[in-house]
Length: 244
Image 1: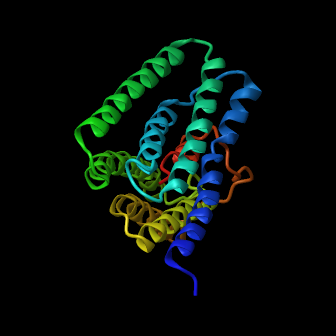
Image 2 (image 1 turned 90 degrees about the vertical axis):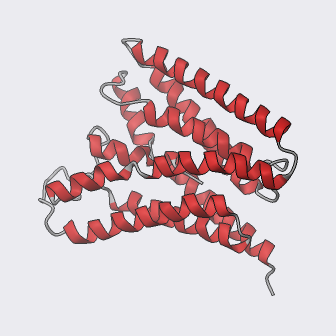
């Protein structure tokens, strides 16, 4: 009989794989930036926000905050590295230099904020329960805010009665990601992973329902393939920020 711990690890590994591919989803955006040697109208804010989110989840998964959450650390560590690479590419091709300064200011502020939270956690709280509660509240707040980003594209779908700007693959992947990490949290109850990813699963389900409702009413175009320049597509591609 498979133990709960073994089942949880298996689910966590699957979650790592799904999350990894979601973290890779902005690649078309940055391929376009590199190809054109210009950041054009692309925004860096979602990637800066993802850096903060990943840093907090890495800290949350460390043994002195919560027990047996190494898989949370691994995937968010990978995500953190990828987001920093994306930002480095953005800064390199930012011709006006305005984005570079804002990225630097944003990252500096995030590092300082994270350092303050880490210091408070380690000095003011001395049990796993208190530390996980303090850090987990921040993690859930950031994750739920990021999971709310599809509301913009969902509003556009309803308004235009078209799913052109809401790729089915990414909607499915986001739904699967939310479900798998919800299952991970339920096997060995982790309220904070459960809350944020439960919300993510519901958000993903809502996207799929909308897709089913408006797929037939979507105008057929020769260039219907995903174009990362389109604002709606970019929002969806940047959804890789809200992992775990």
